[in-house]
Image (tube, rainbow, N blue to C red; front, side):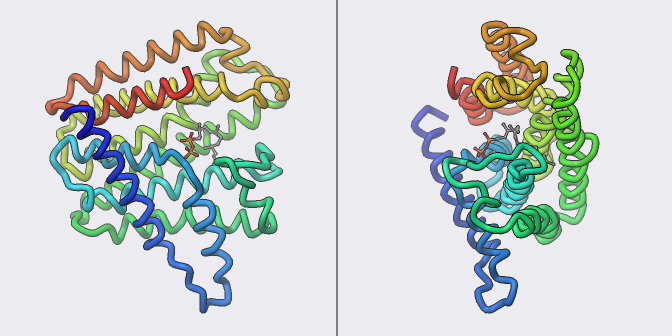
Length: 286
Ligand code: GRG
């Protein structure tokens, strides 16, 4: 696959994801609780990078699976990601007024409505997986188990716990690593595993992609820390940048990217589609 084909794959995939999200979350304008769906569409369709659903589709495509088959599981991951952003922005968590270049959801609707919108997307994601077309019961069960595990207590939620604790106490490098692996890398890993489940890839490839996800997810979060002026300057905490300094943080992110790409190169397929996306994730602002 050449650069032009890769670009065209990602354009087409992004378009399909946005269309499918609108289709999966209709306006239900005749329902008395229709504002729930207006809120969900506002948050879901705001201009995000769609990295996680693109990882699902790129991984599935690496094994010759068409976009259509991977589409609903890809949307389910984006729903979980969006719920986490809505909740993270709330005043009781990170208290952010803007998200994706526009007002955070709780700035345009009451806080309770933003909270419920996150809850809706979280629960609905699992319904989308249970109903995903073209997949066997075993595949759907594996998707559900993988997503609940990676986004749960020992993944994203545990990482977020560590992050919120960090406002009260200093952190060691080991804790920072654990926090980033949970908060950010776990869901990114789930996206790569989703591609494997959909394509029925062998266990060796799935394990290689788990290593890829953890490494690139950690690198992605280190870059985010470098760019996050608010966290660095306002939060009275030790973080990756304050422990290592900006140069060493960049070096660490690059070395993690190399680890991630080496795992991808060990796959039984030509994985240029995945590799290109990993580069974009880490080199976005370096
Ligand atoms: C509330 C359970 C719970 C978890 C929140 C995702 C998260 C955990 C917090 C958001 C804050 C943050 C900096 C998380 C790290 C992951 C990250 C860099 C999220 C942003 O991901 P992008 O850049 O976002 O892919 P877009 O908007 O492009 O989708």
